[in-house]
Length: 345
Image (cartoon, rainbow, N blue to C red):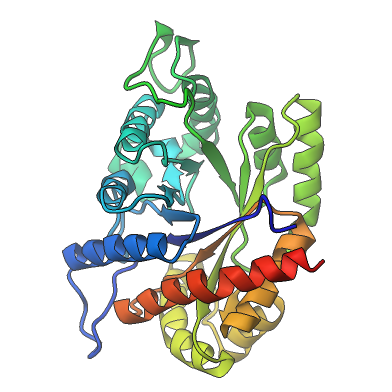
């Protein structure tokens, strides 16, 4: 079963701290992310994805620029986003930027588009949150038309229309790979299938198997819309160390601080050690030794019949040395174990 299943790493470029707990400059965080992408390539990871954020706890607001720096120093790993916030961007510029990245990387660029889990980009770029749904609907429709390079004729309400327009540069393969990030809305699942985009499920809490109905809905919809065979992937948080207890002890304070900060904005209760342990035991967090994490990833892949699994390996102010070790263990220890487990079933 491991044939056809790919394994990636995602990071949002969280602002980190040094060994003494002092904040690291955002410029250094970005340089560290570049090094982690290079390390992922050496560790034989299939994909490296960067999130786009516009707030003070994340350093990466222009993922494609950072990805281009990684592309120049790697040879095989595919490079993309997790996610590009399409609602507050322009699909033509998204296509042009990633077609350029595709050229720089010799055909290794991907895009994962979504509405994003934060809304800071809307006022920053002059968009009204009241237009949240129509912005994404229309811009995704336009990107679907653009991905093959044109010519494109399109009209909508959120930007100027196009009439027989081509966009440049053209990709050597003829089409940019585009995924749609989905948080669990049935409408989003069907929208991805309708436009012929693979679906990346963001499973950040609760048992992964509860998303099985969404996978079935997607597969049924792809048949109905004539796009049968599209891939399904999952993006979930995790952390790997030499032992289960070691991974948990390292991760908990950073996870709690990050989640509680966001929780204060959204009205969530503080994270407790019990809720943390429950999420590892029964939920979406893939945390522990290489054996433990590999077993849980294999279960997630089998249970949802996935073609890709991306581990979101960074969280809060965790120092870069822990992140680098996480990347190394994922590539050298976890992925081979997952492939072995999948082949054995």
